[in-house]
Length: 308
Image (cartoon, rainbow, N blue to C red; front, side):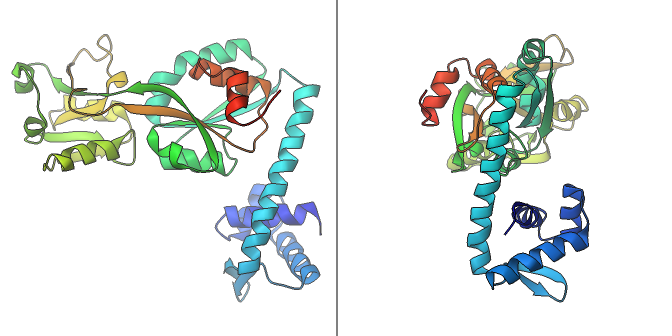
């Protein structure tokens, strides 16, 4: 049994049982991966994968248990490498952040600028997706840190730290009838064409739940993952926009007016998530504290049950 065999099988599963994709990801050959998996199965005397001809179609019951252990071994090896890097090259490394468009566009820039100034030798990558994709990227090791709204906190593999609370606003063109309303209601909102986030994004589930509990069905005519796209279509007169209040900038969005609707919806919380079993480099603690100032290294380690 060899470590590279575990890596091959782990990557095959990550690539949805596509050996060609796994080979490309690992910079090796497809026949080489197939041969090593076969040798591994022969050594153990059992099959890890179901097959239809040469094509892998699923994971066997013993294979599921083996792959779970293989994943742990690989993560432990990666953590050992991180420990080595931390003490041999403190100032250099790579930090990959997975987050939603709204967080990346409106909340992260100041923290990213401060981080790059403090850690100029660290390469920073930002991946965008919806909250479930953000959680998945951190859980499977494709990202070091995830930043997203509530959904990410449901992942049992992640330690999620609350960063900040936020709510919503409605944006409309200047002169819109809603601007004359003294108190905006859900009933009134439901009478207008609504442009908002895809309900997989930025607390969208909370929005749909709020309308549903009031016995209302909003007239959602368009959804988008990008707040700037929402504002663009509002400007074109296709509907009113419901978006995160952080996404409205009075100086930048001069063609739109904003109505605060925090009285209609419960606050949402943005969380920062890391794997519970990951070794965090020093600069990772630094980034966490920039996003969530209440969580310094000691507080993060306490939450991870790491005692120094």
